[in-house]
Amino acid sequence: MKPVFVRPQSLTDKPFHFCPGCHHGVIHRLVAEAIDRFGVRERTIAAASVGCSVFLYDYFDIDVVESPHGRAPAVATGIKRTNPDKFVFIYQGDGDLAAIGTAEIIHAANRGENLTVVFVNNTVYGMTGGQMAPTTLLGQPTTTSPYGREFGQDGYPIKMTEMLAQLEGVGFAARVAVDTPARLAQARKAVFRAFETQLEEKGMGFVEILSSCPTNWGMKPLEAVRRIEREMIPYFPLGVYKERKGSDAL
Amino acid sequence: MSESKVTFEKGNVALAKAAVAAGCRYYFGYPITPQSDIPEYLSGVLPRIGGQFVQAESEVASINMLLGAGATGKRAMTSSSSPGISLKQEGISYMAGSEIPAVIVNVQRSGPGLGGIAPSQGDYFQATRGGGHGDYRVIVLAPASVQEMYDLTVLAFELADAYRTPVMVLADAMIGMMKEPLEEWVPQNPEPAKDDWAATGAAGRPGRRIKSLYLGDGELAEHNWKLAQKYERIRREETRVQIELPEGCELAVVAFGSAARIAKSAVDRLNDEGRRVGYVRPITLWPFPEEAIRRVAEQGVPLLTVELNTGQMVEDVRLAVEGRAPVHFAGYPPGYLPSPDDIYDEIVRRLPAGKEAA
Ligand SMILES: Cc1ncc(C[n+]2csc(CCOP(=O)(O)OP(=O)(O)O)c2C)c(N)n1
Image (cartoon, rainbow over all chains, first blue to last red; front, side, top):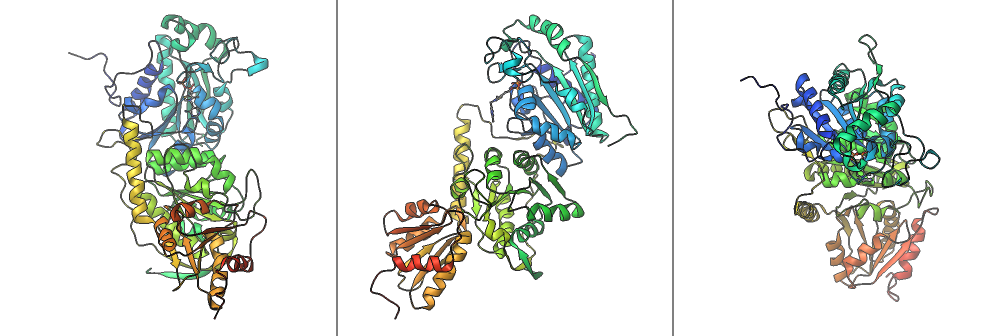
């Protein structure tokens, strides 16, 4: 019998703990597929972050170093600078990357660290119970913006991919979603490109993935998937924002 | 000490040279007075010997770079001064919890707040109480000379690897900035292999986690007890103290680092004059040499603790003494560096009356 769907080798067989309809599981799988595709499992070291993805090390059969909240880009810098032959990726939520860890991601990007960054934007702080994130959309109610985010009070949702694409140290920057099969295929391609960027030593490869959080959005999984199309994509447009071509290596 | 050479060196540079001699090839830091000689020296040397020097965007970033490097088993270090060390505390707590070896240097300036850049020992509590959150300890080494900036830095790397734990070298602006003769020696202890625990890429084995998070039933208590047992072993085997106790000792001075250095001149002068004054210098501040101090107190010898602050180590001295002998204190908060004469007077004031020099 020819298997049509198998678990990527770099994933363990531990069942995901994620809530029904959460996209972290799908995104974990995409990353594992990329590890397998490029054959880097035996030389990968990941820096996990603090958020719903904190248990990354339970799901990937690779070496993982835990980072304090927001500091994965610095931890990964320490790993990669001392082990340039290793493949190093980080996986961060929007609170982790775009609030407490803003300085670390910007400066790792600006130094052109050869790192692959998977940035999961679900517009809330998932792990701590749905508080407002820097990416929370205007009008979106959260447990700490009960009347909906209002710009006079909370500022605007931050567009990290657009910001980081401006930096010379970034070799690849894209925003993708995983809410439809077609977008999932594009997301896979973007994750693969972010891997290749590191393997080709072209600086930081950055992928922002719009993700659902039905639990903290107070929605059913299907409604949550529709919200990505209806509310998130208009404000966070999908696409490749930066791609350094072969010749202009860093 | 197979090869060695003698130079005239600043304390900070001696420390940086020791790191290189100890096999450290990676440095992560952020500029701050009075320790900038360290990154300035290493930024010149490390890239030429196959290492990496990264000037980070902050002390927060640099401690976490150190965490990443240490987790892969590489000898690496960071240095800073008081306000920067405050920023590093979360990372140090994570490294203690994740059992990551690393060397952190604090060339103390004065606080609280922005304070000033004068020598101070105001960070004793922060250094010896762990500094960050959670139930952990950091080995703290207190150099009192330029030579010790070298010797204790080599030791710091060895202890960090031996116990898989962060080690702090706690110097201050005086020891860091002054110049003295330095004998540079080549450490002989080989760096231990770390491929049995470090994150090196899961080649031919299952993935590893370097982490401090334990959520399973009872796991965290077990982890904390495991750390506690390690700290107990460090207490037993790594406590270091210099003690000079004359026969019939009338009083002993307890001091560390630059305060000890100044106090030593006063103690020597009094002994030359025929008094019998002892000298107790903790070299490890954690583990604190409480047993050695208790033994002095048991002989009924009064103690005078001298510090460049308003009274921190004196609490540990009192805990060690447990009422067996009087414990006096002479403190010098930042802004006035005491002279040997000042400390001479403080000692004489406390010497038992009527037993003047013969
Ligand atoms: C220094 C520090 N501050 C706060 C926290 C609490 N905390 C844990 S996860 C988190 C937010 C996670 O949100 P996000 O990064 O968006 O990831 P998600 O859980 O949504 O995947 C916060 C605030 C912490 N662990 N450490």
